Image 1 (cartoon, rainbow, N blue to C red):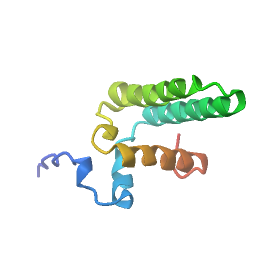
Image 2 (cartoon, helix red, strand yellow):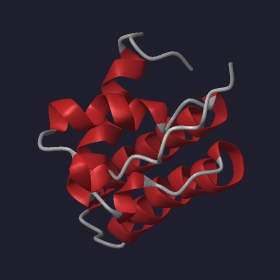
Image 3 (cartoon, helix red, strand yellow):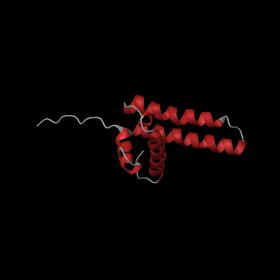
Image 4 (cartoon, one colour):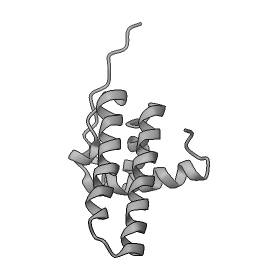
Length: 110
């Protein structure tokens, strides 16, 4: 029996973050993509800390560049998909940090 591929899921169809997060994880099935997300988020947090310590606001755009740059490289080069942040920016931002926490506690593997 042949199976037909399922239709792509539209991230805008989710009514809550709780519904969205399992989809978010499927969009991050490639380990290199997850590692790049973790690296980018860690660098972004470092930039926030440097802003607080030094008072120099120039670290904020650098943190955004690191965070989104690493994530987008992970998606376009390794995961070969389009980031959900283009259609669900708030849920995707929340998903980044929940996945970051889940990686730290070992719930999501690197």
